[in-house]
Image (cartoon, rainbow, N blue to C red; front, top):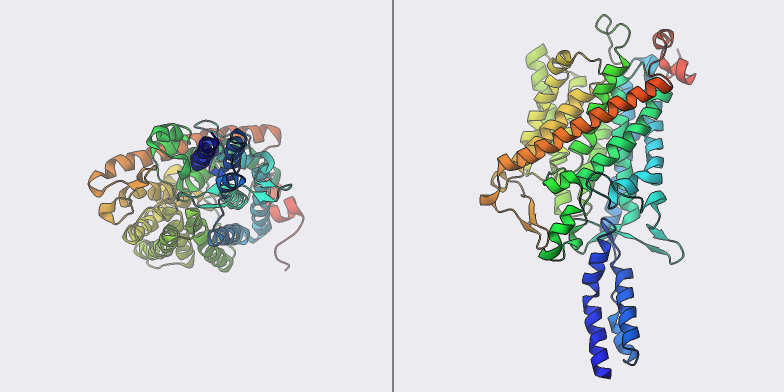
Length: 508
């Protein structure tokens, strides 16, 4: 009998990783294999009390250890996304407005980013990246509880896209906080120069809660690769993922979650806040293209963390996303300049900077999902498409989208999201998509359907547009009723720097 109990103990230990994997499925993308394994081993040890102590020792499974290189890369990527926002986006937007409104834009970006980071820690991360339903998560990680056990001195792990590979969950949460922050800040460019500072913050708080978080959950939440332990549980694991993930939509770094989501909110805001005084009659020229160029350059540099960091590992797909971020952006700059030269007879610095942002936006959903040839084509198409977005489309829409948020981020995000479905095809140099997460088998070239994948991408785009549009409309209405959206005509003419913040960017 002693030998029998000893064998049972060893068998339980061998099965511990699988049982632990199933237990981890209740905490999305979080590997708790170590604690689950210890519970199983403890039970086995109690049943085999007479077994040698050596058997119990062998039964203990080692806790998964995050790769230090992946962890370091993700912390660097998080810093790079912060660089994109403060100071990158702030300077890019600030240079585009009139000098009397420079500080107001810097304040809106800096403070909105800071507020969203706080809200992310309070409840945003939990609702976006824990198990709930197809639309929203739960409250398991409110205040980031559980990501660090101070008594034991241990950290929870977050899954990546490779089986058995983890990073500390606290790093993943911080990385995603920067995504939420910059998304909210993108919106402010649409109604710059005439909105109340308090209105910006109240709107962002509402929109972040009811638009950003659900879209992030629908697109990016899943149970992690290790949850797909066998064919028997695969369907159940997929059913616990976000709705758009279940559809099979590909969004590597946020074409829908970030750019389309923010662009729609900005366009609705441009309509709701109304046009600037003198719009269409006066020239609203950027006061400092030098600062705009500095901001665009910081955006380009920071975007390598944004896109390549979304691989969650320092691996080949991070390298692919890195390279695509370089070549697509360069192609978009050239395309925009060519388009301007054809339309106006000369290319401009503003156009080159805008082209860079257009390319960055368009390659975001595709960065790790397409080959370099696809990346070049996406960037080139985006340059021309976004140039039309800020000229022809803007006139058709009739909204005073001050800094062309929809023309660049909306059009670029849609172009990139749809073309991801085209150039993800292995027949066009793409890496294809995972067909089976149990074996991590990819869709074969002869089985890949571009039409089917583009349709899935389109469904994700349409849902994002409708969701963000409805939430934004309601949020602006609430803000308007509570504190009002727009500053007075006198304050707008004098400039928001003085009237809203009591200071000026430049001393004459």
